[in-house]
Length: 156
Image 1 (cartoon, rainbow, N blue to C red):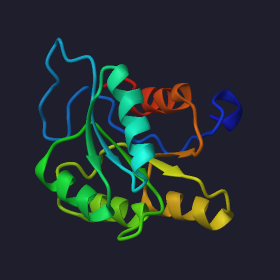
Image 2 (image 1 turned 90 degrees about the vertical axis):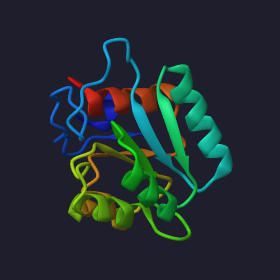
Image 3 (image 1 turned 180 degrees about the horizontal axis):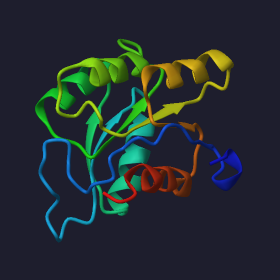
Image 4 (image 1 turned 135 degrees about the vertical axis):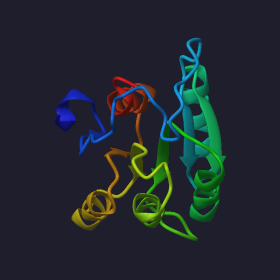
């Protein structure tokens, strides 16, 4: 898919299983229409905006302000999707994703949407190299974010 189909959105390897089963082997409850989403973003305003977009769409959101908080949340809770900022002060998002992908977690295959304001080739390479499934450039619109989530969670 190309950026023309959804402004600000860049497709990537969409290797999520699409089986409808969470990484821990459980299935969402029948009445469970939203997803459990981890949002790792160091900018407080962006965290609030993203939480608002996701909550209004029926998703349940766990917020992390740092890469270390994101890693801790991934270690203690099961998520359907992670949205992670590429550039954070303590641990960049690509390191969080590398730890997720190469760790012994049942969530190693968790779909990851990487957020970035950077448009340089190095940042694009970092997103691809770490194993994130997709990236979304900031600033983005609500529809861009929800569209990317829809693509990553199709069939789940």
